Image (cartoon, rainbow, N blue to C red; front, side, top):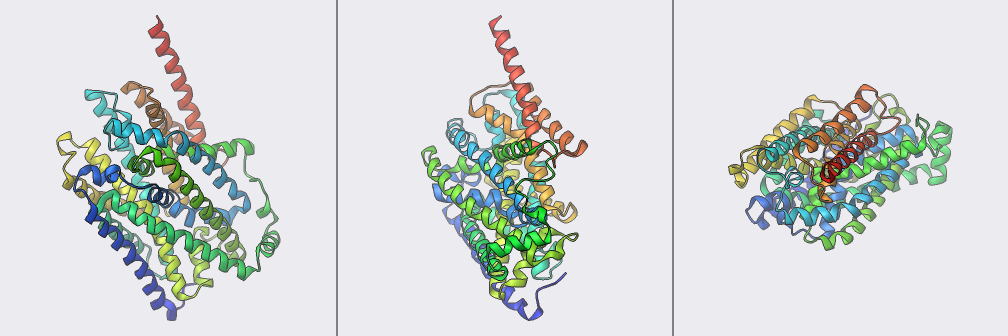
Amino acid sequence: MSRVPTRSFPMILTSFLAFLILMTGVGVYSARFSQGTTEDYIVAGRDIGPIPTALSAVSTCHSGFMFVGMIGYTYATGISAAWLVVAWMIGDYIAWKLIHPRLRAKSESRNTLTISDFITSHLNGNSRKLVRVVSAGLILAFLSVYAAAQLTAGSKALSVMLDWPVYTGVIVGAVIVGAYSFSGGLRASIWTDVVQSIIMVVSMLLLLTVSLIEIGGFSALFNALRSIDPTLLNVFPTDARYGFLLFFLGWVTFGFGVIGQPHIMVRPMSISTSGNMKHARRMYFSWYLIFSLASLGVGLSARVLLPGLIGIDAELALPQLASTLLPSVLVGALLAGLFSATISTADSQILCCSSAFTQDILPEKHAHKLWWSKAATLLTMVAVTLVALFGSNSVYVLVILSWSGLAAVLGPAILLSCYSVRFSARLLLSTMGIGLVSVILWAHIWELSGAINETLPAFVAVSIFVLIALFLIRRRRAS
């Protein structure tokens, strides 16, 4: 596998470090605006404007997966990969329209700072504590794996462009995230996300433009793809075992599963007012669309310009393409964009893990002590680093597993709570259990994820259970 020429290394490293210093500096500087409270550390005092909310959500939601996982998937499958983006966007839009405004308003009225606290706000005593601990434990398990996937994505880029060992990239990412997350909490995460989001989109568009110039334009791109493998131009996926409609609906549900992602849902919780959600939504989807189209284009271009990655690791397509086409200073800039993308997700996930531990698992007397939150952030960072160093190297697999698990476990509970459906602790735990078991069976026992994303059958199973439970509850009350 080709590496960046030695003569270009100093310029690449200098450019890369300059962007990292800028990003880290913004995060650390934001701590000056901290209110010094646990609420500010966890939900940024609920005073974030619509544009930072939107850019932060794009950076957190689509970062490392688009830069590494999605480009690798497009490289392998061709233009049919676009259906994942379309479906995901539809599900995501439904969530922004129907769930985000309600979550913002109700989380403030109930004075809840975490997702576990929000979904149990109608419960009392030991039953509430039990559900909070269980849900927080699941958040810790899934988000730590998810955050590890982001650090893995960044380390892959560094290993290609700078010839660093994979573990070096993981450790560098962990130190940077730990520095500004410890300093400013969610406020620092959002501020850095804004910078990261701009770097991400600009760098992706830059690489796409250079790639298309090298190939000779879109027409030459499609002709080249046809000559490599005609199936790369298939509009519909060829491996949809149960038909395209169910394949598509699976990914729509996957997009709607954003409601189960605590590190993303904390963004609408922190926006200044629910009335600003419409402005944030428009900005979010405009930015997301540009980023997604550029990612798909880069994946297709890489298939033409770097055909040798088949059978090696398609997730290395972007860093290999950048090191092949761009001058040294721009290689460093794009590397910073990719690295920024991965840690912009990891920082939010680590903060959510630490808040789940301090607010939902520890005794309540420690919940409002800021130093506990900061200590938990550092401990979570260490745990995530270990998972990244010794876990799976596939970003795509880790992200899909974690996203689907959280969507199935927490999504239905958040949906019920947003629409004021008050389940008992036993019924809430049952919905979580059914969602988790459904994902495990579908994805890992029956191995049907390639045909239909596991989020769809999990939501169907939980929905059937909820409808039966509501029917029996109403019948009991009527009698």
